[in-house]
Length: 217
Figure (cartoon, rainbow, N blue to C red):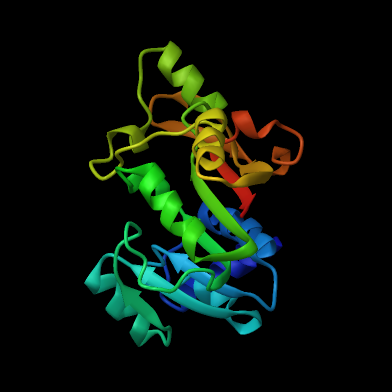
């Protein structure tokens, strides 16, 4: 059993349903968040990811769903109910803002990023993850007349490749420091794919399933 499988097994025992793919992505985010930071986790859900880095940082969550926010509070986290369009904190409050699989749900990307820029301290960092609509798998699916499942998700209103996400960040006064990713997938029939995580550090981020972008104010 490798490290990711051991961590996944622990998560399942605690009743938190994270797939191995999700946790490998999460582990990269945890490394990027670092330690000794004041972190705002936007779209924190039930706090399952915050749990993994909260012991080394001061963390607060922002969640649009009241139900999810209440679950996170039961799990011991300080979570505010609110929108990324109107973040309920003073300007220049946070060292790090974390948005995992959230930006694709946001209709007005620029308004959201402008608010994030406002609440970040000078030189603070924004860490974003989102599905990559230009991944190798999705390119093959489109060429063969198919669409990936996340494109049909009723709550996904925006789709990003590296170029588009970087363009929005620069428009809102962010300096992009790092673009990496997670999961190199090869489809073998519609709806199914095999994913090679050990290739993440070799294959360009533009071809991976998830984009991970670090930008600085």
